[in-house]
Length: 114
Length: 114
Image (tube, rainbow over all chains, first blue to last red; front, side):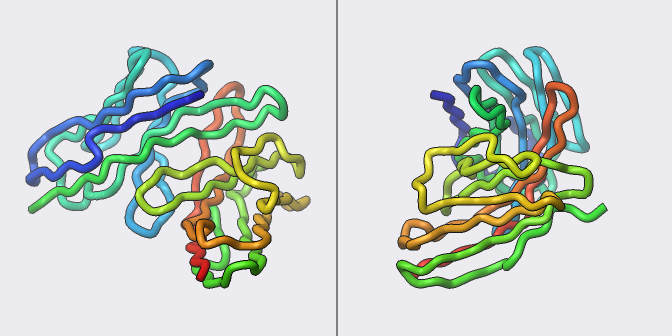
């Protein structure tokens, strides 16, 4: 069974204090490792997709990396507007109907204090 | 371009009732997926539809059903509502490009069952 574990569950940082969020996964046949940002009461907002170990992607203050067993979301010099829940998900495909679904972790609740 | 839209935004029902949630995908996207997110958890996969056919189903009871229309919009139906069905219901649309597919989420429908 596919599993996604995110750590820490919650993280409080000062503005400008860089850190990393972890996503470890066990999956048969990875079809992408996805990072989403979710603000309270809203739908997840797509950030990155990584497909192979060693791959890295950047967007503003965020950088995602992937190994064979885990992914990291690095946040450099964060600002209060980066406060949100960050969700990690692995893509899977149903062998029967061919659906592509996502298995999510519980997320990391990030608070950036001014 | 408009993103994924969902209606209604909020809904209150009582146990035993039936509910219908609606979703319009991003223009050009033929695949729609439904997820349930309870408070403090990541979204959980319910269904995926592609070209009006069900392509995959998560671990949800038969009380949950869905369909997709010729314009690729979709409805999620839940019968005999239980208190535990209270959650944020998310719709995601996607377009497969080769082996890669990214799901983009709508704002969700918040369902409260009393």
